[in-house]
Image (cartoon, rainbow, N blue to C red; front, side, top):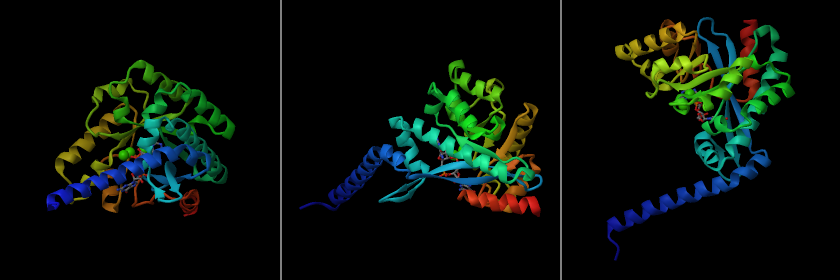
Length: 284
Ligand code: C2E
Ligand code: CA
Ligand code: CA
Ligand code: CA
């Protein structure tokens, strides 16, 4: 007879198996999913904290899996990185996003130029085709490099040597903005910022979360204030993510942050949502 403990153990094992099967299943399904067009992109607006205008959007990829429904990037990006599929997938995301940016720009040229932010995984950074692929995609779409911002996580650039930074420098020289994503999650040496070809810091959501309480944690306030003033003294703009309330937005605006993104403004959604937001903004 099995003991209760034994049963629990088996159950845990089964769960682990199920997870492993899903992981395995998802991993093997990835290449065909790209061919079959099962990926799609949602866009989340980037809003200027000073005047509330929509300045652009971040592209966030999703997978409409025939059995599992819509899967978020956290479910499959790590698998795509592991298998190398992230390179063609990332190229696809970039191409779609840049085309979308062209459409926005054509439609709303008087609403101010809308820009597109696209996430780059560390594997794409080390892929030799990155610069040429990006140039080709921009040219094919007829989009100026200054409409594009590539987001690279702070952790991907920790201890980055010149070989890793070279393609980013070339893109930056062309006019593409490079943003340091998830900034402040605790690894990088602030002085190191000077040698990175970045023009935007994206403050990690954890800082925004700490603005939720009122009054906000005074130490967190000081840290954000310090990061913002350092960033501005280095000519970097500061974007904050994960803004869920008006109080957070107001606090971050007072602290000097430039741009914000979060559910308070809009959840990630189809490109038409941005049309609506930008249109309201342009006319109202
Ligand atoms: P990220 O770049 O930090 O993107 C921001 C994440 O925060 C998104 O999650 C977004 O939906 C979520 N978010 C936005 N506003 C709020 C808010 O107000 N509150 C909260 N709690 N969350 C908010 P998502 O879409 O699940 O993406 C997760 C991560 O997947 C992204 O984090 C990014 O690292 C990665 N990712 C997404 N698309 C791509 C892609 O095309 N390529 C690569 N390499 N990575 C991607
Ligand atoms: Ca990002
Ligand atoms: Ca982020
Ligand atoms: Ca993140």
